Image (cartoon, rainbow, N blue to C red; front, side, top):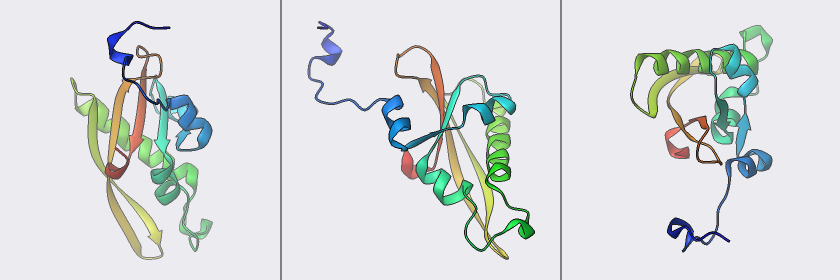
Length: 131
């Protein structure tokens, strides 16, 4: 049992590992590493299901794939991260084709902070409402 005062009134915790297991966070670490990220990386399920997954009606003839949309997201996240030093979060905008002839531009947050162990840094990419 811990005697740490920080946990004295703790009622419930929900770990990052539990969120990944539950599908609330989606592990994209392998894809992120290809783009130069060196830390464990996830996107929120809201961001993934609304924008990374290709909307119905947009087949391959529109040049859309989940892999391509994730590539675009990670590329812009890396540009934003490299452009801002000394902060734990960056904001950037990205446009997604949502249906033929209609794009949607959304603001995205990339936040780096401690993982479940409180030491090793992890990256979470999310929409503002997921923060």
